[in-house]
Every structure is written in C-alpha cells, then in structure tokens.
Amino acid sequence: MTDSNDRARPKTASSLDKLPPYLFARIDAKRDALRDAGIDVISLGIGDPDMPTPDHIIDAMAQAIRQPANHRYPDYAGSPAYRQACCDWMLQRFGVKLDASSECLALIGSKEGIAHIHMAFLDPGDYVLAPSVGYPVYSGGAVLTHAHTYFMPMNATGGWLADFSTVPAAVLDKTRLMFLGYPNNPTGAVASTDYLDAAIDFCQRHGILLVHDNAYSEICFDGYVAPSVLERPGAKDVAVEMFSLSKSYNMTGWRIGFAVGNARAIRALGTVKNNLDSGQFTAIQDAAIAALLGPQDAVGAMCKLYQRRRDLIIQALEQIGIRCQSPKATVYVWAQVPDGFSSESFATKLLEEAHVIVTPGSGYGPDGEGYIRISLTTPDDQLLEAVRRIGTLAQR
Image 1 (tube, rainbow, N blue to C red):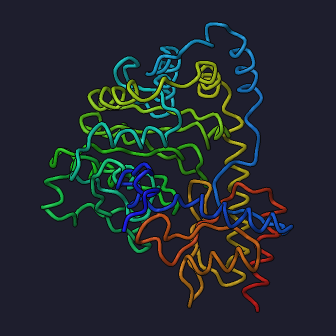
Image 2 (image 1 turned 180 degrees about the vertical axis):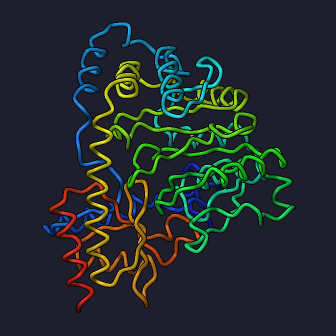
C-alpha cells in the first residue's frame, strides 16, 4: 500500500539512482565525524593545493573587481580578452595555433566542461569510452544523460594507458565520446606522443570525439614536459582539450578553465553552456589572464616542491612495505594496498585507526581496485606525520 506522503513527494530522475555518491563527499562525511569527536585527521585525499594563489594573480583580481563593467553578466563563451589569452598561452606553451573566436571556450573549471560536453554529444543509449581508472565525472556525465560507459582497461603493466583497441564493435557503433587524461589522475601516468597519435587515428576511423583532460599539464617532474594532444597531426579534426588553472596556479576555488580544439565541438559545448549557465565572473577571467600570460616562476617553484614531497613520501612508503612507482607528473602518488586488503578496506582502516585520509582506487573505476591515491598537496610536516601513522599501523 502506497502512503499518501510518498505520492506527494517529488520523484527524482532515475539517473540519480544509478549515480554513486561522489567519492570525496563520502570521505568528507567520515572525516567530519572524526573531527567532531576531537580527533586530529590528516588529509592526503583531495588534491587541493595548500599554497596560496600567486600575488600577481590576486593583484590582478583586486584591480579587476573594482571595474564596474565586470559586474555585469559575462559572455557565456568567455571574454574576448580571456579567450585570446588562452590561445596565446597554447601557442607559447605547445606551439598550437588556435582561433580565439571559434576554437576556444571559457569554462567554470574543467569539471564543468567535462560534465557539459556529455549533453552536447550524447543521446540516451549512446556510449562513452572512459579509462577504467580515471576522473569519475567521465562516467558520471554519461549516467546523467542516460548514456552508457564502456571502461577501457588499463593496468600497471601497460603503464596505465587506456586500451581502446579492445572495444567491441557493437559498442563502437554507438560511441560518441572518448575521454583520456594524461598526465593521469589518479595514477600519475603519462602518455607518449605515439599513444596520442594512435588515439587520434582511432577516433578518426570511428567518428568519435576525443576529449583530452589536460588539467595537470604544468605539474611535471624530472625534466618531463607534458604534451598537448592538439600538437599532433589531425587532432583538431576529432579532438578538444580541457585545461584548468586550478592546479597550475593554485586557483582551485576560483573555478576557471578553458576548452580548445575542434570548432564544431566547441560550438556544441558553447550551445549547452549558453542555455545552462551565464559564464564565469569576468574579473576572474581577468585574473586568469594574468596567470596565463604573467610570470611563470611560481609554477616552476611549485613543481620543485611537489617533486620533493613525492620523493619524501615514496621513500617513506617503501620503508613500510607499500609499493608504488615514482610519477613524472600530477600531485598524486598511486600506491598498492598491502596484501589482504581491498582499496576501500585499507582506506577505511587508515582513516579510522591512523586518522589519515587517502582515497580508495576503486572509486576511480573498476581497475583501480587494489590501490590508493595519496595527494601531495599537504604541508611537509603533516605529510611525514601521516606516513609515520601509517607505518605505526602497518607494524601492529
């Protein structure tokens, strides 16, 4: 028998029932409960830089926010000045020439662009190809558009490169988008230009839009320099690339990024945005111009800091028997869990007994099981204290 109160409640979309709780929301809830109990919890979970936004960017924002013209509705596509700055940065950084009016779009953070591009290209029943270890929004966006996700397998032996060669023909017939992201979150893996060329060729042959998430392009170590997929021949025929200023310039809370590449895809994504949002605050775009075109010293200093932290934590983890590889990029270390644990059970044990937050690899996709992701965006003293606590726990 149906209760009258149940009939009165609004019915939510069926897609919400298929969407798992956002990974960090679950972790935050457990963290808050422990902190409410007076327990000191160290977070090596979310990759939120612990360093401030560089002063010259803040100064640009302070000046821009006092401009009355910036207090009006922004252009949903981004100000012409910001889009031109993005294109100038792409030319300077990667040698990629772009038209600011047709091949560039401002984003309210790259996460927004990744989510919205599903709406621009997918109909119910279509497929998305996503890495089997990757940013959860790749598959979450498919769920919300009543599409399906095929997870391209990846593993340590293959260098955590998503294998698109094994996608079944029946899936390919209905595939509209393929997501890749290198340098990779969460594994820290990097991709060769040969791999990117193969991905471009694959998408050309099958009529698929390649969406390359390049949010960590500037966080590189040991002399490695991350490429843009748009550097490669034929890329603009089938690819768009998402960039974020969050990690490169310590601007996570500012919510600013951009998409560049195939003009048709940029126009389609812009159509979605024009109907669903009103664009990013123009003063933030002005500050982002200062970030992209101003001094880059802070980026280099940040990479040195993260590289030092990477070395510290890898050495400490190896001493307590936790295996991991040294990443060439990103702000993460991807480590195997000890024998006898799943990703979730080990992460839970660390949180409840060592009071250290790490993210379970299973939350990033089916092939993430057996791993945890450790963020380097934590001050050195807390980072080493967290490793000490993990070591104490491992010796019990």
